[in-house]
Amino acid sequence: MKTVFAILLCCTALAFSQAAALPTYVAAGAAFNQIASPHVNLFATAVYPVSSSAGVYTSTTADVIPVVLPNPTGKGTYLSFQVTMRQGVHKVIYAKGKLALLLGGDAGAAFSQASPSGTNVNIAASGTGTVIYQINPTWGVMAPLRGLYTPQTGWNFVPEIGVVFKP
Image (cartoon, rainbow, N blue to C red; front, side):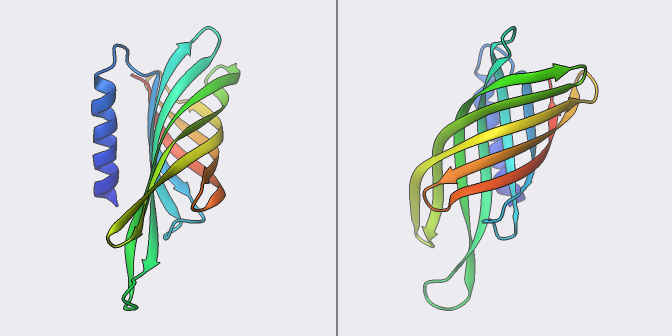
């Protein structure tokens, strides 16, 4: 799982390195996820300003969700992954000192391994409330609460915690 997350994080960083401006925030962390098995998933997010003065930002988020499924042969189980890649818009609704609260949503694609040899592609969407606390000018912590929707699982409320890097 660490390898998959590292690859996704590197791909996200590479994709964003092609952009003209640095993101306002880059974050990575873990979440409690009731559909994951184990109940932990990993995420990476990059946030760009649309209008800093208006407090509007875009985001790109990747989630990696492990799921243990029964082997179709009837012998044991196998570990599969559901991966979501979403693009979103967020608005700062409160900011004072080192603390900020954002509300927003995102949508994108969800890829899941339906069987040992197959992959499903669906839509993923979420609404998110995020608290960001800036520890110093470069580092911070974030605590998003994401309501994630995928056709495979329906609505799933996912509390997350992450480390924020502000380039």
